[in-house]
Length: 89
Image (cartoon, rainbow, N blue to C red; front, side, top):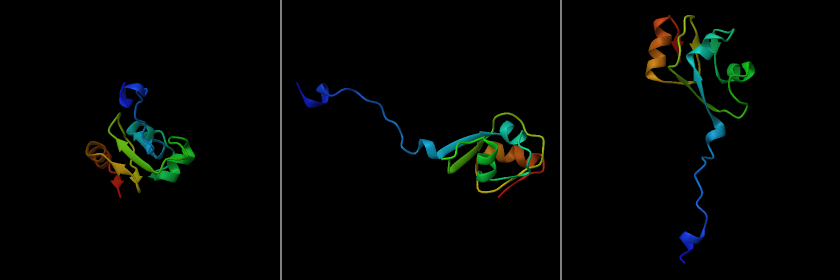
């Protein structure tokens, strides 16, 4: 029997997964600060301690003015943040 049939089938697990995080607009709405960066999200417990790359996605709604620094923002989330007077840097 060939080697590829004798070995067990295994899935793929990305090694970069613990370093990436996604944040919803509703999570940003619940934060008590107006200037948000990776450190502020870690201190609030929204993302894990290992996260380095944070993406803000359009899920939920935001009504307060926030300033995002050093975060990746999707097009829809950027439009929603700028619609309420916030900025993305």
